[in-house]
Length: 522
Image (cartoon, rainbow, N blue to C red; front, top):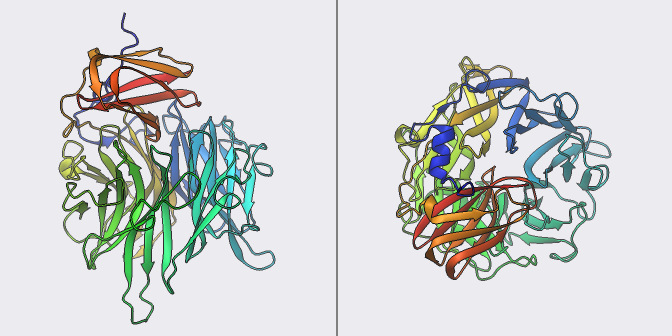
């Protein structure tokens, strides 16, 4: 009995998400796919548990404390989590916000900024760890919180990432012209083997030039990737304003990688007159990179993406000369992207907002692996909606479930003639579609055997074919790459699953084709 045979990602989505049908709201979530809750809150970060429950970072709109709230699969609040369904994090008395949230070994790690007016108004960085039950983890920092308000004193945190060994990385700004990258141990202490005392800094080196860092990722060689922008505002000087999409690469030691770009930094623009900024960087098979971006063409913002070779050179076969720039409705409306996910089938899902004036939509744009729009996802690759009477909305939280369903979070409110009412948190869930365009000669599930499944850690993959230069990529249920391994070839491969229990996908890509396999870690 081939109970250990895998389901391909195509079949998996067909069984669970009615593949080949366009994107649509999932009415099993709060009866119409759309949930409006929690006044004066922004649902800016989302994690999906393997049981389908939804963790949302609910940032305050204005001052106040942040809380992580857990929802059941039907959209109701899971009252068993924390206190009445939520875990509140208060670091300083004015405001505490989460700017990034990741899960590792069933714990949730967050970083963010917090503000105090004791001894003078100031803002600084913190990190925290939360248990699976929704309580601050006392083994991390002090009572679950690590503050960065003294030695080092850090200004803002943008993103957090965790490597396969459980080391925790954070990026942000020490000040506008000086970025930081740090590494912590699992207890929140700085890892002194990284950089200088656990931290490394990079200054712009130019007067009135500033950084904005948005995303951190780790590639298959354990190198650290930072995406954002280097820019100069139009502040009246004779030097024209500019925004360069920026990608930095660091070695695992914390030193900048001089083999990437120019001295470790790549600066890019979609045209000589455009303003571009990196939002999120994804690692592709073969260790190339796909940067989700925003492009301002002096008229409006557009969703965009840039593909890079491993050395930082532009991969010109993608889109037009390496760039895919998309004005969503081709009407010069305002639109700004805030998050993205790279799917195991190679598509890029981008979310944010679209619209001018009072009416602004939640939006989803799906791009194929060549940068063109995926018309099987939605007409012209674009799906948008508002929240009934709430006509002004924007999505920033994004997660993709193992069954292919998409969850978005953000805010919604009602606006009329430029006057907007109270703001509330907004969540929505969608059916997905599948498109295999660009993936040819798929390996059949009959060609591959995975054993054991479920597994306690190590798995064997047997192929009836000899595979040449195969790359095996492990994805978790939230669409995050947890490991990537390249082999010289053969028909028998062994690898270790991540330590956290749950469901994973293993993508096999070789000269013979591509297949995605599902495995459960006990």
